[in-house]
Image (cartoon, rainbow, N blue to C red; front, side, top):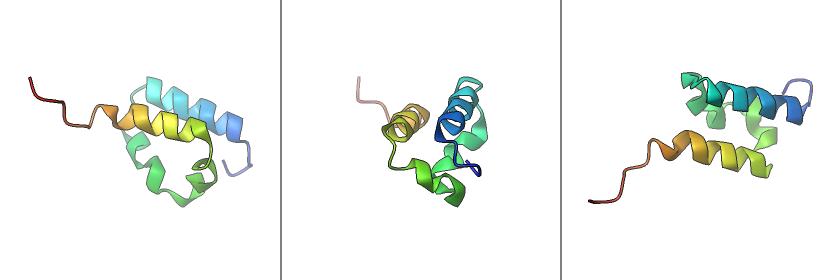
Length: 59
């Protein structure tokens, strides 16, 4: 992200997601990733990351 390469950043984040990298849950709060927040790929990734943390509906 420091080089402004959004596509490369998303590739790295998807790789981290597929590797189940724990620090990925902190990406939303890191200022260096703020330029990605307006990209639809960011929202899609964050929805995948946090999907496992949402409470499940009743039985």
